[in-house]
Image 1 (cartoon, one colour):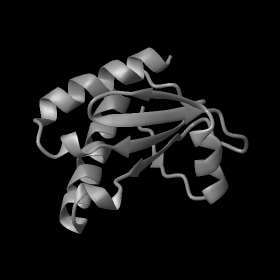
Image 2 (cartoon, one colour):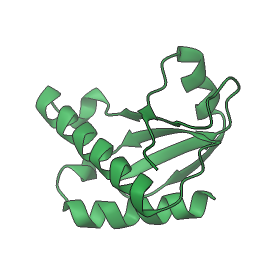
Image 3 (cartoon, one colour):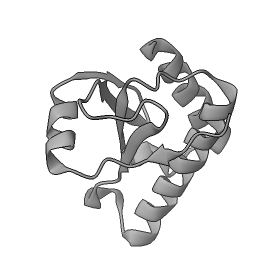
Image 4 (tube, one colour):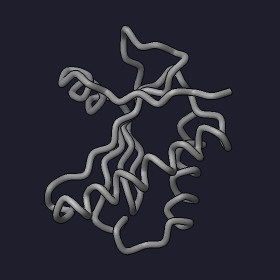
Length: 113
């Protein structure tokens, strides 16, 4: 099943998700919850890399990694498409290996069910 990943676009969606539940680990914080007017056939997720993480090159690298990880997660594990997700990266993502970050991210998404 090919699913399309769609980013959150409205400021109100971000505010509502931050008020919902969250899971945090060494590399990132995941806010998740149900939003109204959401299409359940598409994965609604956004990635945030704050300015204090570094310059634009570093922030884009983090977001590229996260997008790639989520494409793998959609194929490998069963995600809850009823939820919308907001993933906020931490500075430790830059210095660690891709496989370690992948394992922790997959473990967190398995806990969300």
